[in-house]
Image 1 (cartoon, rainbow, N blue to C red):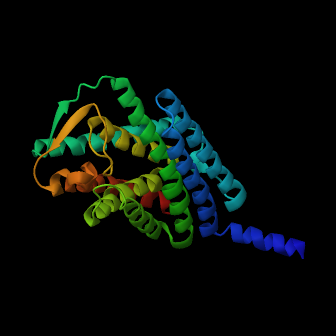
Image 2 (cartoon, helix red, strand yellow):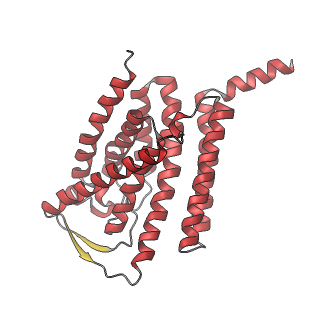
Image 3 (cartoon, rainbow, N blue to C red):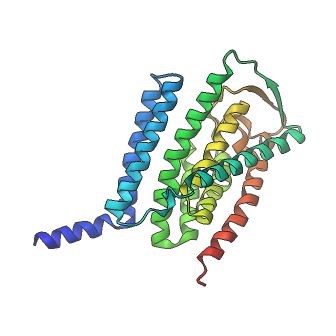
Length: 277
């Protein structure tokens, strides 16, 4: 009888939605703890705390996959982790830089050096916030949710559900509108999901997400509606569809189009990898 109960519990835990929820709940709790603690600590201590709790979240993810889902974890392999992360950083930085440059050329943004008293602190704060978001959100959305739904319904359904959920997740941000949620769904949900399906590597996706948020913040552009104390002061000119309005760069049609342009080749590459030889 005990063996039958144990077997039933094990089968239940190995059901994708269950291990997704188990891992996600713990990682979200870590995210809440990170938010509370970093409000009380400043400077290098806050950055170190973010790194520490990020590593704890990665450990929680690995333990969930190994002992609850009972599956291998190639997406967080230490082999080539640094190379994949750097590739992601380069991809994310180029994406944001190109989006910003196009908007500037169309007359939507102008920048002025903010002459901060302590630029080092601004750089450190931008890195800290971007790093925490990249690690924790990617573990939940692309690591747990996308893979759980993919196991149940396939890659396309998983991409659609995680993209829509990611867009809805940002509806509570300052300056958010229905359009900004759609924009996040298309440019971020689809692009980050495509990046994971293509590389099958969370280090790559974390690097992309990190560079995206960090560069926006350093430029002084609101990050998903959240104000950024950057190295520059940005002035938006013209229609919200071009500049993103109060929501920032991610609410711009330019960023949406460019994000999809980058995501489509990734999805083609992912589909080719998935085809049997």
